[in-house]
Length: 136
Image (cartoon, rainbow, N blue to C red):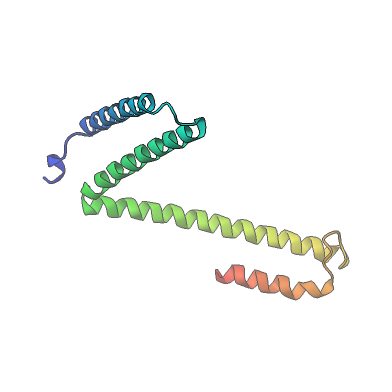
């Protein structure tokens, strides 16, 4: 339906490749026309050309995404959300594990271990643990 009206991905890639070649040719012509540029100025111009190419690629990808059916986009977002939640859960468990290891290491050291934490720091550690457990 709507998706069939779009040119095939191969044609889009070919068109983008042709545009990139044209831009490179224009860049070479500009370099030949402006020999009075310093090396630094030339590097800056080349970096701007690369940035422009990247922005055009990004625009092309965004156009492609915008033309996709809404249900397909929603499915992709759901999958991304599941992966993000998994990464967040793994991060929280890693932080919890580190805090737990530090607490057991400090508690067994008699209060004045290598970390420089005294006995009064246990309340702060408990607060940190509660923040981690509550998700804050």
